Image (cartoon, rainbow, N blue to C red; front, side, top):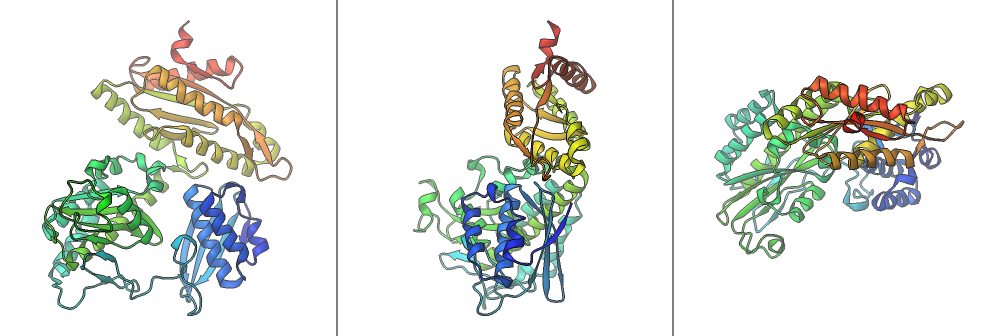
Length: 473
């Protein structure tokens, strides 16, 4: 693993996985090429790095502030290069503070205000993190008792319980009828979406949301709260709501540092139900909720994420397998377990070294995740073995998912980061068994998927899927 510091455009471009850029990433890359260098180049690079982090090709390792500078460290997950960028905390007066796609390059302006539709307005000071209400607006709810009540939620050990507590506080403070939390697309498509806490607190259908996706996406993009005082009479947003919709809505971003995890929305059946004070309260609680989510995800990464593959580890797999077996027993819906082992993987480590092997393992984890269903749980089982839990499946759908994963790996050219052999072809053998159709317990299910079915796949020539049922004939 090498450590690089961004010094100029040439050194930077050598570290970027440019072949993986989407349309938005290419736009940022073109802006990077047009940059004159210096601080502007580094700011543009950071925006591009963050884009690649969203796509899963890079990861932000750390962010630190010292002596008026912000230092960010990223890792290229394909080559394992570590990249460090240092930026001044404040942009020069003559520098454009907005980059491609409206991404802010510097700190938010202290006078920036939430977008409020229909007259209500609440201002937030980004420098100190405090909330400032316009003159004449009552601020009783932001008293110390209120702040202590919000802080009390952080003492809850479970995320669902903490957010449920904040829901109740929002209802009692603002008088709203409904509260809903929605994950961003990036969070919903990540492994974090499989966390039980998120499924307990996030609205799972559009009917449960207080605002349509177009409105939520606007709030996520702007990073500022939006208040609609009259849904039916708001010319800008009414077309997004159902024709029967009435009342008032506030939607605030779940924003922690530079990340927006989704939105928190409240609604009332009454028009003009919320004043600027309510907007400030919802925004404050949304930001606090985002902090709880960020903390939970950090704990998740420390405890349940395999640091090599960046997917769930064996500990998380064991807990979720027990939970899914219990759910299957309760609902009567079968679930399946896949155990996959990379064929002849030892040759990668022996030939190119463990850094190349780690890069390949990370890419395998990403391919398995991309070819799993939204509800499936992908984990590193150990070494070059991977496990996938498939809730609510039939034998036919289990085979379809397993074959899709096997085929995707067989078709992929894995980037090794080694000049000796820049790419490497691999295959995977997969064993599958279903509960309760094939097995009567967790131990029995793992044994039949791993020791029996996977072993048969290896013995038959590798690069194949074997269902436990097929081993009986």
